Image 1 (spheres, helix red, strand yellow):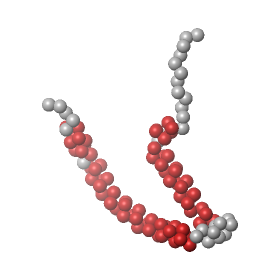
Image 2 (tube, rainbow, N blue to C red):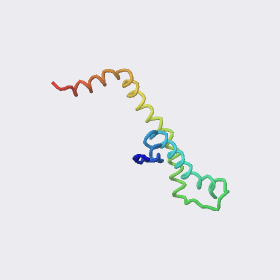
Image 3 (cartoon, helix red, strand yellow):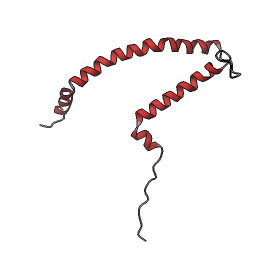
Image 4 (spheres, rainbow, N blue to C red):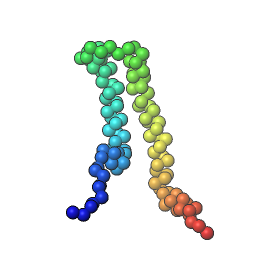
Length: 104
């Protein structure tokens, strides 16, 4: 029987290396539910859990929810024009980047 070099078994790290954006959005979604669930289900929310969220934390969560809409709208309005301009002039950006890499 010939000696065959051992092949590494696929791990969970390969998923993160292949699909980093998917992993980011899954973790962000899970974190959102982890943060908001005690406030929603606790005594200050629906009252389903015997958890009392302090007033300071309640205020911070409420402020984050109030400011999230305008903040995300501002981010979209800032990023969208830059993205459109980049997509329109993408070939010029790429040619400018690659022309600096040529020797001679």
